[in-house]
Length: 321
Image (cartoon, rainbow, N blue to C red; front, side, top):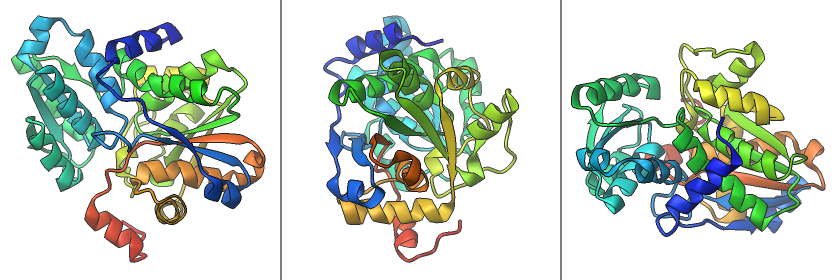
């Protein structure tokens, strides 16, 4: 298990390399939902997403000899940008396998950071198999997107920041893909304030964590897909599931319509361009508005990396993918 001590250690490693993001109160969303809503704005950074936290912690923990050889990663999007950006800042060569569904603009961003980008596979798990093969053949360390203690500890620093900025937070809603954010931030939040409710949210069509928690073991989905593409995995990580079992109070699933409407609501009510994964947090709050009424609720808006063509479809009302 990743502990609060591991998360504090990650923050010390990342000091001066990864910027702190604001926790912003939203009067408009508070009026809309009946809760006191605070937005953890992870799109307010260079990579426009939170994944650079875990990637930086992983690279900083590597011996210098491993760093000089370079690293390998697989990603559907934001993890790729995080590894590429952290690699450039620390002088670590990066080879990244991205999925066929990953936004073309994110592929170009990674190349702009100097990473080698290979496109293969429909979902993260497909790209991960090739990344593992490259790692085995070259001896270069593999940076898993979510099922790694260093990645989890890095993402957990979000929980530290929320607790420091809003010590009496009642509810924190976290988007869930492979489960690294839920595991890390959940650990931090529950260690510092056990009475805070930790709620995970997944798309109905890609609810791997929900299924796994219900079954008590990892459940592999056959065809996960969603507008919230950053949350699409076939299966969650083993460590992530074990930590979610300990630190998660509730899981919520949201529809494609709810995600799309929340993307538009965040533009309209908060002037924020949010990816589908981030909008899922607001969608969850809207579905839980009666339970959360009058409470202090923090939504982790994971990033703003939404492809222009996807945004255009959402705005045009083309919901189904």
